[in-house]
Length: 490
Image (cartoon, rainbow, N blue to C red; front, top):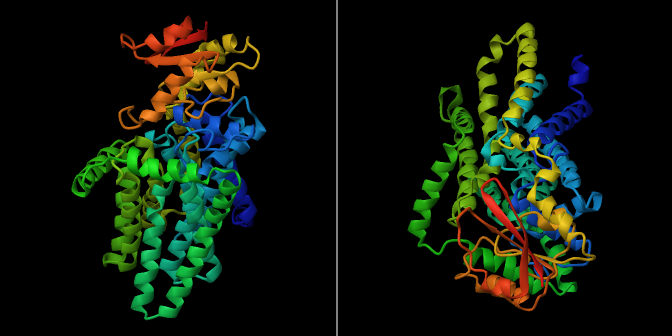
């Protein structure tokens, strides 16, 4: 029995199985759900699917996340353009890799058998948190790259082992994450600072320079490949403008540094207390590793530094969304590991198997506490997206415009490709980003699309003067907190 559960391939299979169960129940990309209702996931899917139809991100479609996220969604769209099932499969792979490297972290401190107690518990806790959001997030696809580098970082802290291949791989991980969502790079900044401090302390200057060079080379490989791809598709300038300049200048707040730090602290504290289980596990875990053996374990201050820099990078821009915190939840595993380190002496064979049974049942049942699970009760025909799609698809090669709100899933449900760069309105006020709104207005003035969809809250008054001149209202429907109107070209 021990030979089986200690086998590398059995552990991989276990990670795959529990990822399949967790993502199936909790992610709106899964086949249990009629669609992923999240505006972000729909925007990513629209861009990813459009890439299959020769559109270039940023150049032909304005969006703000990194190009590798759209590549992930493009792969999902290759599997299926009409459902999120491809993204669902990629999520399962993503979380399987994450869990596998967390299992390697567990084995740095505990026997392999504890993998089967800790992984299901950890996964159920993070997937049922509000930080997970709807599924299909950039943060979720970053998690495997973060877990790989976190494992290597801990091996360095515990065993002082960091070979050239490993540091190169971690540079590669940082480069990939940079091209998905660069504000999550705080962890790798802490990682490099740790190497700098330790190597300087040991007076290994030559070795330090070599390690940093290898990291930088690894990091720049995916970045250079991406630059070349955009250059040959005439999209390099648009890529720089949209992914960097827009995010830094328009999307982030323009407050002073002191104000940003103030809001950083407030936003982080408000976000952390949303899920007290994760908060307690994180504080307890980092605290335990810092002060285990009744003395300060100074090397684990570096772990704390990576935690602080990760959060700082995520929130320093001033924006505050609950799902931003999701990657930080990986630190909660230290709390679970600490618990078993404390009580492992009393966990004999009988107690272990009882815990295995209890945790397996508890973790499975707990998955149904996901904030998303209520959405499984709906069918496609219940959703406004598919109601509108039935009308839109009656017209051959119909074109639509998601007017002045984030991608509501209408491109997805109607299986249409945008014919305008500003296919939705980004989450930036028109007064700060006029082009986004004026271009959409021009499309309507010129009858540039066959159908226009608007979204409003009940009793909200929306100016329709431009719209009503060229379009007529043909259907109104509501879902949850919004009302939607479908207009057809006169």
